[in-house]
Amino acid sequence: MKRMALVSLISLCSAAAADEFDFDWNNKNDMRGAWLMCATTGFTQGECPKVFERCWQPPMIYRKRHKIRTYCTGTPQFSMNEADSERVRQEAFRRAQDEAGDR
Figure 1 (cartoon, rainbow, N blue to C red):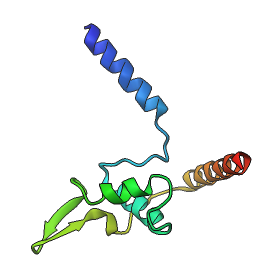
Figure 2: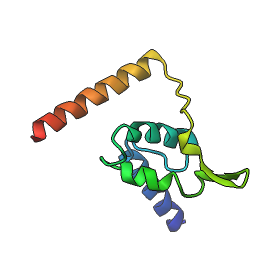
Figure 3: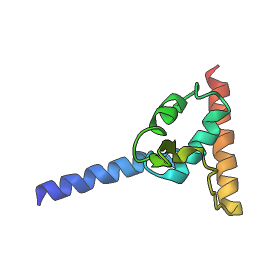
Figure 4: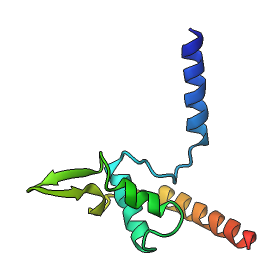
């Protein structure tokens, strides 16, 4: 019983600490979006080197016609409503302000 309570507490803490803009490394669609964003920087900034590496590891790679391919090169399918778009814009503005304040 104590183990179950400890596992529940740890999982709740990690869920609360997760940022909605962090990548889900096992989700094909999320990694496609990360790949698309990181391609603009040449996979050099932030976690982009890790994105490049992760995209060529399981479960993101597969064999097709005797060639190894990655799910990451496909176009992501985002489904967002206006509220989601506004929240993303606000988060981007907040991060830009934080970055400008650090300089």
